[in-house]
Image 1 (cartoon, rainbow, N blue to C red):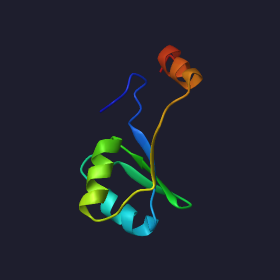
Image 2 (image 1 turned 45 degrees about the horizontal axis):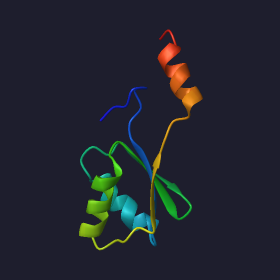
Image 3 (image 1 turned 45 degrees about the vertical axis):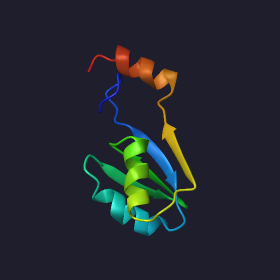
Length: 83
């Protein structure tokens, strides 16, 4: 999925063992990037329902899943840029 501003879905996922979850999520179709951020992972390319299903199928229970959104200013800049 691609949003209006050309960005991909980005989801913050907090899990008890980020390294295990990152390894599993990297094999999920559509995932473009998994970046560690403390006890959280920033996952780009797929939406939160797919991430939740993948983690639960692998017996990993996330403590938080948050869709990350572009700011209105960033969206405006993307739409009005002359690339």
